[in-house]
Picture 1 (cartoon, helix red, strand yellow):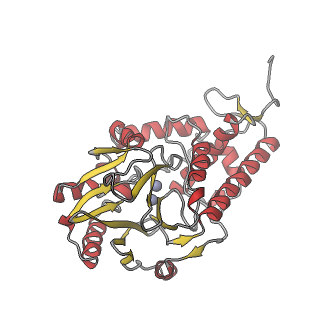
Picture 2 (cartoon, protein in one colour):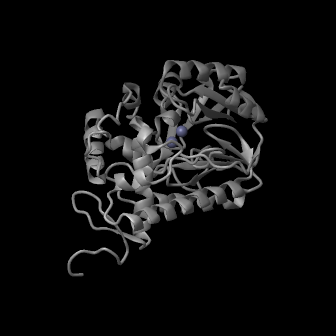
Picture 3 (cartoon, protein in one colour):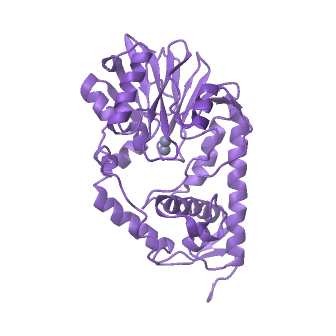
Length: 358
Ligand SMILES: [Zn+2]
Ligand SMILES: [Zn+2]
């Protein structure tokens, strides 16, 4: 993730102040019948997750749940209470994407309330195939080795938290499809499939209140991590850039993200995010031009980061390699570079540095 200049209008001023004060923002009724409920996101620089409760029938539907831990659960129950609801009033859980800070409490909510859970099939599919931390780590280490990460300094990257894995097995009751109205055909809420940050990421547009719930797709301050999961060879950055344009026509909507704070200026924010990746793509190209044959880790080390590569350890380093790789794959698929490596990546500008006969 990296930081961009602020060209948006912050509407969640209490949230922004809380962000600056490093405290949890308040529960707010953003519009009649729609509340933002923050819960703690422990040991993460994002610090909190914003869930949204919408009046639905005799209860509420929840968009995202917060991280699977006791403090977040208590915060969710208390937040619903401030909004005038009980946890037993939750009828539905709509998940923007398959990251644990967004669906981590879904199973517990369903157990307590009987609420149904919906998410896009592309992310539910990933959860269904997930077969435990050891398998995941093996796949990730194999992925890292292909990227060039065999120097030993990357072996400490993965320090999984057990709760993160216990809750991966959340089978949704329903799949969300693009354009669908998950709360019923008469409801103002529709799903927009925005793959990129994850394959099954969705945003929700509330046409009655003119609100865009963006999950992690568009955030006011940081760029979401775009990085293919181990084994995924798709051009996820290309998908993300295309998905950004899907929200381009909603510039007059207020944006309700899952982290940080509410804002207006969606079209400008989309331009900034796309420009950020354009700059990054040319930076990656420059590194390969200067160092033909570099592997992905070497390219990553050659890029500018918010703190020096040498000081980056653990998960930030893993995220950085994933981000760089997403840019490399995008450049490859668009014909700008080629990967000549077999066991380990070896990147060249297209048409250059090809050893041996063509
Ligand atoms: Zn996410
Ligand atoms: Zn998130």
